[in-house]
Length: 298
Image (cartoon, rainbow, N blue to C red; front, side, top):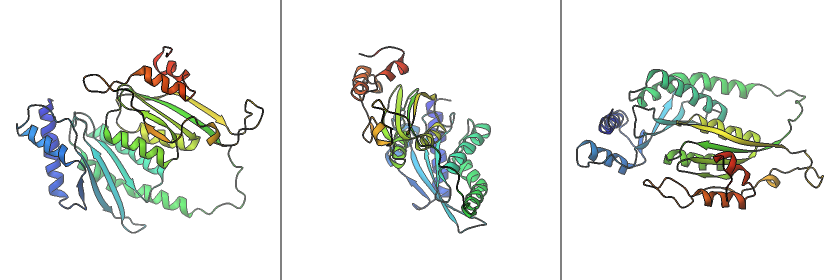
């Protein structure tokens, strides 16, 4: 398909969704300018494909046999090549745990990949979630209802982790926003470097790092992996023979930030790797530069 054919399909689906969900409480276009640019391009008012991409929220109340109606929010964004590639859809439901939401995303993506490649599918995704949400809600309620045993199992050893994640690229505004919001929600420190390639470092409790990775990896990526990881038990001996007792004592970053290093190139999507190396060197983790790029920084 050509850019124009992709744009025509996207606009047609937006118009269908607008007719099906006519109120702001049901459908919220979070980037009206992107929709306007898409329309101008399809109607021939612009010769160039639109630089921004439509993003919107669909809000639904789903019936449950066990509880009151549950509010479900679908956060959707169109890749430029949609529908030749899948849309980016994040589902939020307060009645589900984080692990269940992660599994719901994975099952939804599997269904869309097997049944909707090359076709517009946002409405199909909404219907699938409405039809399949009940088992997740039931499991959530069952887990809540299980009484705690009098003798709790031994407390697992707490571990500090630092994940170095590599992506072919990080351009999408929604993904960049998710990375920032999820790291803050999970109390992780580190940084993300958008562009090509994309780099993300998160550090903190191992369980929080694993939760962050489980959310990120199910998004639509050309390539993403954990290039390197560091796991440190909190009761290990430090260099001064004292036991390491605090997560915060092992952090190399203060808070989480999106780091830009002199963006350049035709699309402004390449960073100055020399500046990246200096940044890592200041944080005391310059060794990871060679792990990422196979060369020593300077």
